[in-house]
Every structure is written in C-alpha cells, then in structure tokens.
Length: 233
Length: 176
Image (tube, rainbow over all chains, first blue to last red; front, side, top):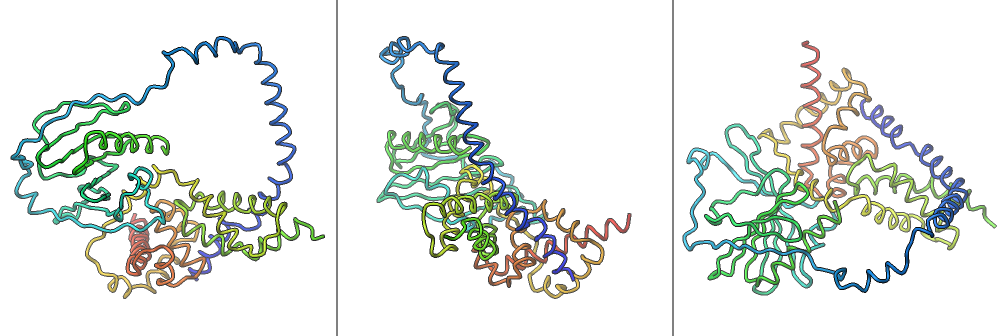
C-alpha cells in the first residue's frame, strides 16, 4: 500500500533513533570540546597581545575623524507631473491579463513587522499574481502589505522577479537618489503628499508608496527597511 | 535520584512524534527538520540539569518555536512568501478527487517510495509538508488545512495535483 511505503520512507528520513544518537553524542563530547575551544582562545590571546597598540587605539577613538557617521543620504527627487502618463501597454495584452490575489497565512509572524514604524497598523500580506489568460502563464508575482497610522500610509510591494507592475509612468525624469549605499528612484507629488520609491536590495525589488509622510519620515522608514533586509540576508 | 539520561530518553520517546509534527508544520523547509529536532532536544537536556520540568511537551514546543525562528532568516521568509502563489489551471478539486484512489495506486505500482520521495523533494516546502502530514502523520485533509492555515481545497489540490503530475511523468517515461 502506498501509504505504508511512504510512511516507512518518512520514518527512515526523520529517524528518531538516529536523532537520539546524535543528541547523545553531542552531549558526550560537549564539555571536552568546550575545554578545547577555551584553550585555543587563551593561546591565541597570549600570542596576539604584543600586536595590540592600546595607546594608538585610544588616540583613534578620540580622533574626531572616527566619530560615528550616519548612513549616506543623497536625495535627487523627481517631480511627478499632475497628469501621470499611462503605461504604453498593448491593448491586446491589457485585455488578456487577469490579476489574482491571495492573502498569505503561511507564517505566524508577518516578516514585514521588523521595519513597520512603531505604533502603526499593518495589514495581512497579500500575494498578487498577474496571469495571461490564454496561456495561463504567470507574468508577475509580488507581495503587497499596507501600513497605516491616522492619515499616513505606506504601501509596500515586493518581488523577487522584477519591479511590481504599475499602470502609470512615475515621472519622466530619471534622477537617482542614494540611501545607505542603495540607489533608488524617488518621485514626489507635493499636492497629493505622495512619495514613490523604487529600488533593489539583496535581489529583492521594492516599490514603496508613501502618503502624507514628510521627507524625514520617509528616509527613516527606508533606512530601517534597508538595515533590516541586510541584517537578515 | 533519577538518572537524567534515562529520564531524558523516556521523555524523548513520549514526545518525539508531537514535536516532529510541530516542527514540520512550522519550519520553512523539511531539510531543516532533523537539525531543529536535535537542537530542541539538546536544549531540553541542558534545561533538565537546572530545573524540574513538569509538562515536557509544552516546554519542548516552546524551545522548538524559538529554534525555528532562528532558522528562518527574514530574507528566506520573504523569498518563500513571494514564490508561494502557485497557480493551477481550471481543473476543479472534485475532478481530481474522482480519480483519487486510482492515482495513488497507479503511482505506487510504477514508482517506489524512494522515487516518489526524490520527486517530492523538488516541490515547494508546503507541498512536501502536506504529503508528510497525509502519509506519515495520517492526518485528514481538514486537519492538515488547520495545521498549515491553508484552505482544505488547497490541501486536496496539492496532494492530488502532485500525484497526477507524477503519473504523467511515469507515462512519459514508459513511452520512451
């Protein structure tokens, strides 16, 4: 019977006896291993002491040139005109594409929580998939989450394939900003209080749409996002 | 005085299946399961040295929860989340189920468990989990859906769609 054979296979792969042996073996050799590690560390410390010049280090610490500097920020913000141009999508493609959405509940904890501003509310993560109707081919897949607080909001879209789809061109200008080493295109529409940011980090493509945030709040959010992605990559 | 090793072994045997089920449900990849299990019980063994633990299973589940979190980096979670939307064509679950018993039998006549396992390893982690819960833990579709927090129809789709794919591959191999 298939079920019995598969059950045996799983029991072989996740073998309780083998796991117990590994746990027991780890316990037996743990203390001698710790003693060995300590001995090596002590030996290394003794051998390298002459190479540390403490006076020089103290001098460097007090030197103003070594004071902590915040992340590099270079802003070149593009202005979004009042009439945003629609993307030049072939009518046939536009008619032949459907969007599917799905709320993702695979994890107990929302992974975007790490850079959600404190005190803000966060929606569920929604996965958006663009499918060509004729061939059922997945053209694009990205995840979307919204963070809100009173009148402010941030919509974050993220994909591992390409930049998430937008129906309109952000801005005709292409000036690039740089925040903490990451190049990004930031566009702004002042009458709507809208910032749009596109950037790539660690092979992930981000599209951030911020509403009613000031420039300082936006930069803080982007710095936290970049730091969080780097720390966890 | 109770020998700590004997006590540990007794608790290990009693709790192994439940801890394994929890780790399988919540880990990112089945490849990490054995390592997480070992780390969990190792931490439990050390804890036994310092305290009396009345309810071993909840304590072990708590340790396992932390070990799982450490195994899943934020980036890994992102990448899994963005690739999780798998789109199937319009064959309904009922149509798949009409062929259910035959699919299982047909697959196993032509494939050994080893081959099914090797093919499963190439599927998404959630599909691998569904298979393990169905075949090893012998859970129902509803129980699997509740454990993995996905719709019951998705569980059935994953299970029978994968088996149908294996049957197609088998037939292609036979024709060569």
